[in-house]
Image 1 (tube, rainbow, N blue to C red):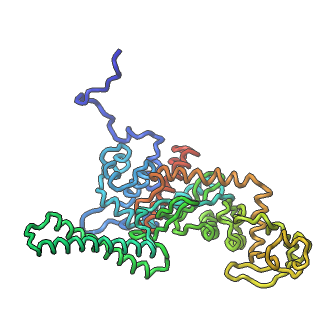
Image 2: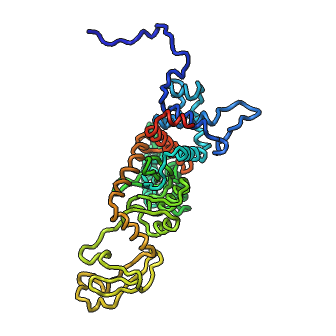
Image 3: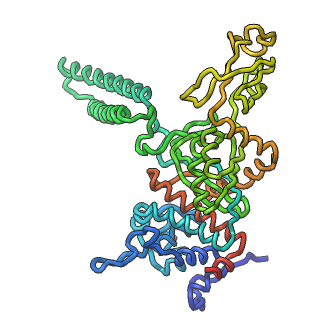
Length: 473
């Protein structure tokens, strides 16, 4: 029995009359072409939307945007790979109508239009809203760390730089001593110059250049407020989880609609901590959805009392568990002290009443104490000090209401987890394991927008089908 054999490459054949016949009717590339064609690129802020009167003609920004969106859909993100795709991929040939820009032109488009690309991604969310695909009442919020281009070796603080400079100086001194010894031997009558003398000289010059580079970094770090800087990409910050190595990264925040699973808003920050991002990200999502009220499901990393209170002022209801630190099990926990809002007092387990005794401005908290600790029989179980102090945050009431919603409906956290974690996994798979290709926060935001737009196109197509999306245009 023989194997299945292919056709002879030199055999003439009758191909389909048009390249359109090679593209399936339900291919995602048709959605990309339809969506970009419906955009007002000039209003979004893309450059060169009107051809110049003089000079060589350029590529239309719509074609370049089509190429990038298609590339991120197919895990083809670098300008070099996109250039090669234009010459050998049937979908790219169809989409670009046989146009083949070089990699410099492709890279320049993403470099020069980051804000417009972000607005194009938001335009698809508005398109889905107009088609009734987004519920917009309950959303899930979370963040993930995405690797930056910079190498972990470029992370340095004052101590490490000082250590590297000292080590380099010791190496320079070693080679200089060796050169002095060689010169001394030559002065004593040894006319033959060792072959490695020139190598020693080159090593000293190389080490001196390294020392100059480290000294320059020291002066640059001294001018900045940060204690640690990522040289080569200062807007990236060392980030990681728990005890994992801290790598140069950015913090990608996403807000996902619970009803549809579409990402309705996203942004990129260089804050490693999520606690101060709850209000700005939630408010931006509320504005994007043009909603009067919004219910945000998130995790304990966002349980900042001040941020939750600001959300309540803007009609944003937050449901999340309170993030608590390690508790001392030898003494009464703060949760065992009952607060009375009417009298602004706290009742301790021993029946004593703690009253306000001052404020902790930096931590935004009020101190509560009582003089009854001296005679209380439960004092050994309460505190080893003279008296027990309870700190209550200025906005503790907002945290208590937030936690009460979780206790009333524990399924909210399961909904949050199933809604917001899946998009991150898909985006990281489509972006080479979760690593950006460009440098700087401004251009990283454009990359994130392309990834989010690609995910939303896939999600919307899986929900209603390619034909429905194309037909509604």
